[in-house]
Image (cartoon, rainbow, N blue to C red; front, side, top):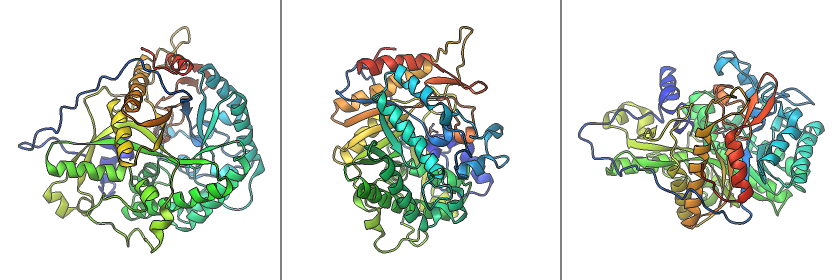
Length: 502
Ligand code: FCB
């Protein structure tokens, strides 16, 4: 969830608490005297610095429509919740918006040239629902669909796989006005939209993700309120997670009905959850953290049930109906993993449990690790988290096909006098995380691809343009793109299908 990544310790939870937001996923307090010793020496691992990858491995980058496209009201596009949210004063750092972003709507040919220069064979991007259906329902906006058709064709011409996310957070605003993800009617609307896109692009796109990070957009959008639509309600959050689970099942069926051969997954945000100590209570807390962070939208899809995150399942609050468990099922063809950090979990104290409703429901405290170095956004670099997570999913779900759909780091290095960007820390980050993938493959995992977040520096949600994640630098005043040193290094990895020394 976002708390395991973004404002996890510092801002989200304390701000949430100050605003009276339920402290459902409250931050960890300092270590307690007299508690059991740490569960394991959390040493870094020593993966190979050079490793060959399986033939046909997908090397890509990932982006999202709102974060790069701009053109926010062009060619008939409707307003999205992110347009509304960023245009609301006080929501985004420096008042930034995605109105222009990287202007990729007009520069996608240039962007594909960057991919070509980095020898990529996969590009994960998302479709903006309000470009396709400006009001969230009704007939297709042809100009919007044509944009994605041109993009897909241009990718195919360069032998780059179009890897398409159907929903990366930019809901049409009129659907939000009707309750957004707390309203069950959205399930049918979403299925209609999915079918429309599958019919139009499914002759040339084979690989799809239904959602990007369902736990982040429900958590950050409905519980903490730092993302659109900015709600801060425990009830809304719980309801939204259930509607999203139903929509995932319905979206899966809609896609397969239109394109039976399509390969369909979701990009889940994941974080390896470790107990703070070897006590039974902390181990249980780590399992609860895993349930809510990693598999709340996966266990439902693959097994038609909710994992045990809470002390009881709040079915009434979630407005569950009989038959819902079946509706949530979606036998995904692959599991997408977005992973940046690990999570350290410990049990909430007895006092907190009885005095705080949320701690009673979810008696877990979570925080990020602090042993690795920190990126500019404050996330710990811990490559072992990726191999641990891949292996956990591999064991628990019977060796599924896995794609790493995102991993990346914010470092704000800029051009030197010659215009070059020496972002060695980013190269080291990807070297470590790709080595984590190699390690997992050597232990038997079936990983088919790695997508660096991101192709370009771009609009980083609540952080605006203050955090640069790109393998290419964007000068926002001219929109000039420059491949950073990390992108050049990545280009060698992709060309040789082998991890390269830094
Ligand atoms: C992920 C999002 C992506 C980007 C990266 C840094 O949670 O999916 O859009 O913001 O984090």
